[in-house]
Image 1 (cartoon, rainbow, N blue to C red):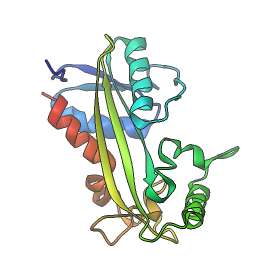
Image 2: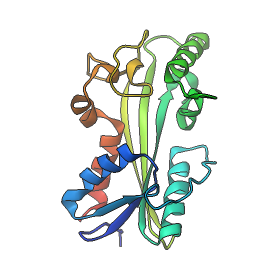
Image 3: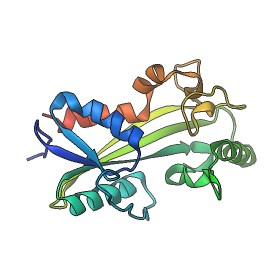
Length: 204
């Protein structure tokens, strides 16, 4: 039998990000699911040692489920660039790391420089990916992968959003994610795609 979440269930979000907690809590509230976070419960952050979005999502979700005895939800996300054989992929955040914190302007410059060096012809196709993992304390889990396909543009456009949004033009759109207000971008995002699959397959 496929496992699902039901009204009255309590769920721990395997994240220390308060913004994610608000976003996911609001998505699940209509289903009667109470959401807390790893940060609120004082959980450590496990080391992400896998080379896939699914693998890292599983690490985070299973750690939180085991530590709390609750169903846990995690996500792992990033951008895959075809000219770079899928890089930066699971290392998207790593490409932005500096001693002073994350610098995505630097990461976007590196990405564009490596795309140009690759010799690949334009258009430079890419996709944002989000993999959600629902994990139960008994070690079972379910995965939901969402994508937003598009192309890279240069120079970056827009100051909305975060990460690689200013250099990503979703298929069928004229504005980059960095030029869209949140309400316009959110339904088009990889995370929205993954959550739609989760809601269809694991709620109620």
